[in-house]
Amino acid sequence: MKPTGAGLGSETPAEVALANKVDFLSAIESYPIERPEVVEARETHMSWVFLTGRFAYKLKKPVHHPRVDLRTLDARRRNCLTEIRLNRRLAPDVYLAVKPLTFAAHRGLQLAGDGDAIEWLVMMRRLPDELMLDRALRSGGPERRDLDRIAIRLARFYGGLAPETVAPAVRRIGLEEEIRLSRRELARPAFARDSATIDRVAGRLIDFLRVRPEVLLERHRAGRIVEGHGDLRPEHICLEREPVIIDCLEFSRQLRLVDPADEMAFLALECEMLAELGAGARLQRCYEAITGDRPPERLIAWYTGFRALLRARLSALHSLEPGPRPPEAWLAQADRYLDAALDYTEALT
Image (cartoon, rainbow, N blue to C red; front, top):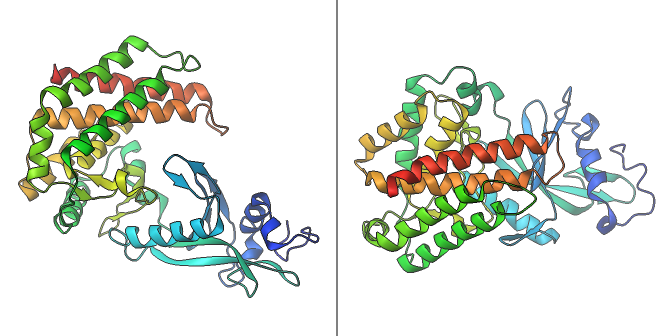
């Protein structure tokens, strides 16, 4: 579709299809001020991201999931504003603004034009792909000083957050529900995964919550539950001089209420899943040395096993979605996470 709006015919703003919006934002002519040489469009599960030379523009899909409902324009606008606010905590100079995608009968679609706003976009400073932590892990590993800078950045972040008042029983029930959901989803006949392994991992995680509730309770008493990042993975960390951490899980505050030890265990797991270089362990050791927060080893094992089971579930579910990655690759990844979950939960028995 041409950026002038040609081809839209007599459509009203409310009738402009998502495909037309994606076509428009994929065209270099749609960014007359920047004039990029190319626009790269990347699709995620909840959005489209358009990468120009200097910026990135995120378009939310009108999706509806148990924890997020973005079917209305106002809901997507509010989600964009929330994303900006939360992510400026760890990436203050990356999340720049919320920009409207506008439509006018005489001009068609425009980025921040003079027509009616028919979508809202998160505008970001584009980060260099070569500085992302996942890229560094795959290409031989980041330098130790980079890992130490990440740990320092996260220690300052979590240390500056106020403790959240969350009833321990409510959090424990929520964790159990996530474990049961992972077990149910992974047991789908369509996935044909090893049910004995799934049951063993889920059983160990739930048994620990019931037999050793004081371990989690102590974290509550110590004020360790905060509104954190929610999705702390290597692909969300940029190794600039001051590490930049993006893509906070903006759509669910419940999932952001975490123990920093949980998030650090998750980051360590993801680092080791990408490359067994000891980067994850170093991050954890450095973080603990800075903060003095050294949770029991069994709690770290529980958090890591819990996250590995969750990632196995999400990997399996991705195999049902269309995309360039074949279903077999997603299911193989799910098996790797299940194996990791089995290993970590062995320490709980």
